[in-house]
Amino acid sequence: MNGEQPRDVEPDEDATFVRPFIITGGRSEPLQADLRLETLVVAVGVPDPSLTFERRHIVAVCEQPTTVAEVAHRVGVPLGVAKVLISDLVVAGQLACRQPAELPLPMLERIRDHVRAL
Image 1 (cartoon, rainbow, N blue to C red):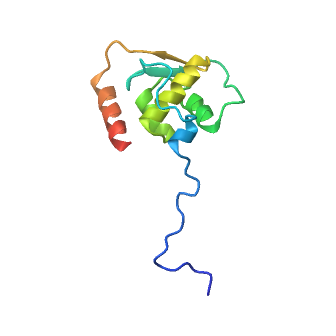
Image 2 (image 1 turned 90 degrees about the vertical axis):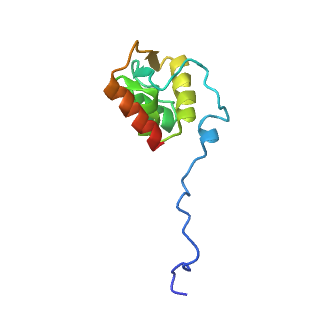
Image 3 (image 1 turned 30 degrees about the vertical axis):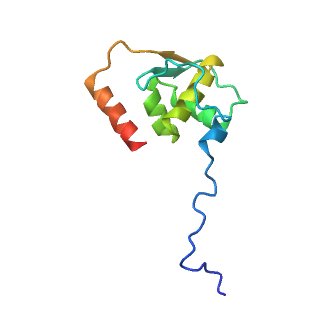
């Protein structure tokens, strides 16, 4: 053997993949039911140093007001996972959210494109 893997065996590409239910602690429903794709979330104050990696990443992404759909896309998690994590952070006082009255067409198109990319 020369150290190469046989051609019919693919390397374990997702060895670092973490299942979504692990990230959310097994929960599939957010604590806040009113989070929509277009809900804007923004970080409040300094992030808690005890936050997990994904939650810290979300707070960093939300330094500027960002939609829930954009957060999911930028953090690289499914939309349902993003909603659970965002609602946890809102309850913990790390994020604030607001529902925009009406979204401009370019933002709606961006949200649509990001959801399709998920």
